[in-house]
Length: 332
Ligand code: SF4
Ligand code: SF4
Image (cartoon, rainbow, N blue to C red):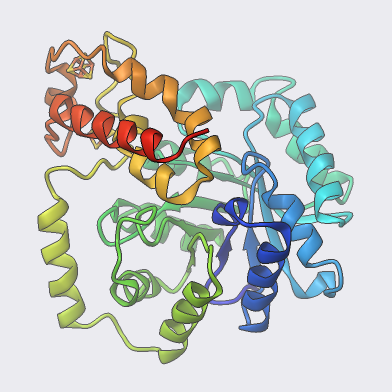
């Protein structure tokens, strides 16, 4: 069992070790016992490990992730995770961002990461095998395999598709559901509306990325208030959805393939990366993709395929400008 809200470990990468420990311990003191991190979040696992060294391990539920698609790398990531956490087990270990058919095929192939998960469970290093994804249709397919105990998908009042089938299915199958991006990756700023929306779904644990203890305090007080998602909240959410409607990328990747090889959704969501990641790391992750987006030939194929009819070529230009500004403001 976990607390009604989790602690997402992406933003602590931007903090010093002492600051991160203060935020993690402060969250635990507030009653949050579910911490979510990943191998891909640079030193996040390590900072959590350092923060919890004097805390009874059984009182916490720790989730981490590996982007590995093969068994050998997954087991290496798992051992590193345990070393960094200072623990001999991790509660939930997720295949990170299992969002494409290629990744699925690699993971399920002989010698794939799924075998690594099973081996980790057998060795007592993993309590629950799991995955995270940005693709709802693929996630539904994977949930039905019976190989995973928990699933993590984006879920907030703008990106609400998971509520239609994936969340009820998780309940039916007895799987945990971790709600990624309850604030849309930092884009939804009304914390009350965003959290109350997610809490309507009793089997979803919102997993907000936390950088400051004040953020965690605010979220916990919203949870403890137990105020239902009201008609007023619905109106606020509806107004915001309308305002964002023509430029919100849901990362579904239905717009692919792009003849220029542009990773459209990654570029369109680059603002969330700027807000959450240490800029040096965001630069490493996104710069090449944003530069490639400059090669858009405005063929319009992606616009035809996008179910939200986003004006992708224009949006790409906006995001490239935003990125250049961030690069100028963050000299490396
Ligand atoms: S409009 Fe640009 S981004 Fe869209 S498919 Fe064509 S080249 Fe790719
Ligand atoms: S641009 Fe449209 S189709 Fe492409 S990922 Fe975003 S929402 Fe989906």
